[in-house]
Length: 476
Image 1 (tube, rainbow, N blue to C red):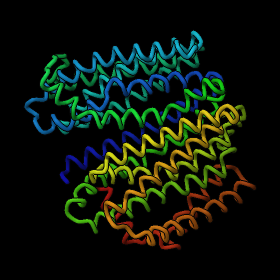
Image 2: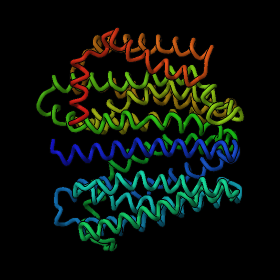
Image 3: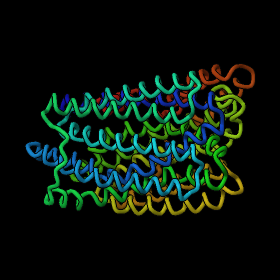
Image 4: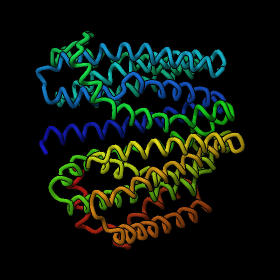
């Protein structure tokens, strides 16, 4: 792998980690200052527009990156054609969001927050495409910087609006301003560095080709987006905005850790594709290692947060959010299966099994929505968390059933490593529970962080040689 690719991967990984940290810190400030009802309204407005933004892109940026990378001399043609197509999709998507918000009977303030969040949605989709063009060129410096800068602007403006006592809609405005600045920055860098500019131009031949390629990307993206955000909207109608506020805390907390499997997948996805064609034995070994690595990260997070859930919620959000504790404990367990689904999904997509992956996501979405409708009226946020847990178990389980058809894996080795990881996480959890009973929660976290690596070496989950191999994989 070239130095430029390694540099780009490192830049995006660091930027994603920083963005998650800033986002989590900002959401904690917001939740503490505006209360459960306000947090529910704020989270719902963002979730609602995020659900619709996928219909503006429909996989077009992925196709732009792939096709323009093959023919960089036609970059401007592809960019102009995609931009022209997205203008129409943006108008249709915004209109659909507008009518949906009104059809669901949301109150006036929430509707206006959704309308403004929809403007943010359009800016987001715009700079997504521009950064897609830069990705095709191989220049990710500006995208990495913008990820951190945009989140910092949002946090700075939003915090200022909070302390000035402005209405909640100004928190959405903070996102809109940051996204608009990001779009202007991306357009400027495109022009200054690569002499590319945003000029919509309808090219029937290019658009027809792009649209035909984008169909599988679009289906998968729409299904995944609905799966991720449908629970918040169903909660708002079946249990009220207060339930959304309680659910938003565990949702944001578990979402903050997803950079871990995303970083791993970024490293192993190209190798999956390479080894599928050239070396099935190495493919099986890499997949098994990937599963061990994600479980190695997920199990202590689940054990630690599951045990300390009440203390963490009270420490970060005050006891007003105590009803978030049980949903957090459920969702943090589901994180184990969510982490496992990343390398499984990457393997299926890299090895010509993307149709199976799309079918699995569709099945899980159907089950998840059905469970939400059944469980939310009686159990509120807890019901939504249970539905998410079942969905993630199915997502990982059904995908894992397809893996043997790609490459023969050692179930015995995976079971052995899984058992040792459970032992290590279990001992860590016991220590955390005991320490937390007599001292502060932060001391318990530190104790867990100290005992877990020791247990990993004691159970021989990790050896010195494997540490070297893992570091080599990360560098690649």
